[in-house]
Length: 326
Image (tube, rainbow, N blue to C red; front, top):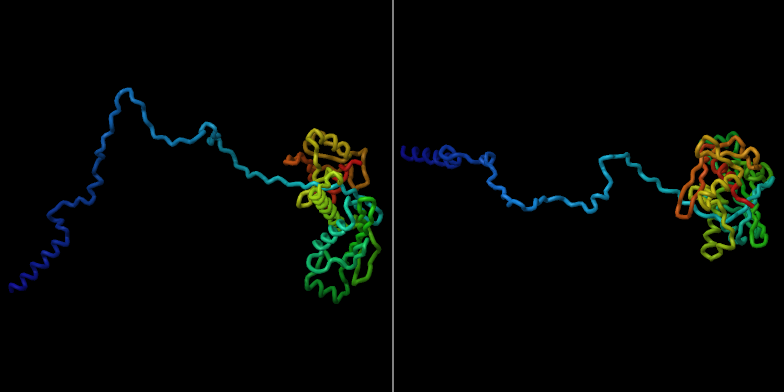
C-alpha cells in the first residue's frame, strides 16, 4: 500500500514540475508588451545648434523636379547612313548602265558577290568571260511540293530569270550594262530586256547600285583615293534607304529646287514634283511625299518617306537621282 502511494505521489510531483509551476509563479512571457521606453531625451543647452541626421544628395538642386511626371519615351536609334561614290546611271531602251569609278576586276567582284547573295547556296554564275557574266536561271517565287506536282501534270512551268552583265573599260571607269531575259524549261521566252520592265528585278539592280557605291567608297578610303572618286550627295543605310547629304540645313531649299521639287504650301513637311520640270523618271507632278531632315555626326540629311507607294525602293531611287546635279 505504501508503494502504491509513493508511485502516485512521484507522478504528481513530476507533472507539477513539467507544468512550470505556473500555479505558484506569475507568467511574464508577454510582459514586454506593457513595458515603456526608459530612455530619456537629452536636454540641449540653450544656444546650441540643432543637429539633424539627413540623407545628403550631392548636387540636389541640379536634379529636375520629379513632381511633374511626364510620359517616358524611349529614344529611337538614329539611322546610320553611309557615303557612296558617284556612280552615274543611264536608263537605256534595253539595259541599265552604271559607270563605276573602279577597275574591271574590282567591279566584277562586286557583281559576283551580288549574284551569290541573290542566289544563296550553290553556283550562281552560268558562264563568265573577260567582259561578260551570265547568271544561272533564278526562280524568285519558288513553288511548294503540291504546286510543283501540279505543274508536272499541267505542263505549266514557271519562268526563270537570267541576268547578263557586260563590262567595258572607259578611261579609269568601268561601264556595266545590265539586262535580263526569261527562260522556261531551259528555253528563251524573250530577248534581253532592261530590268526597269520588271519591278522585282529593278529593285534588285537598285540594291546592287547602292552596294557598289558604298563598297567602292570604302575601298577609296582604305587606299587613300577619296579625292579620285567624286563623292555623291546620295547616302544609303543598311536597309537600302537613300538619303541626301546636305552641306547644311540652309542648303535644303536650294537642292530641293534644283531637283525639280518644291515644298507644298500650307502642308508642313511635304514635298511635291514641279509641274514645270517633269523628268523622264516615271514621277507624276501629282505625287507628294512626306520628308524630314535628320542630323548625324556626319551632317544633316534629307530623308523622303516613300513607304506608302507600291515600290518604295524604286521610288526612292528615282527621287534621289534628281539630286545628282551635272
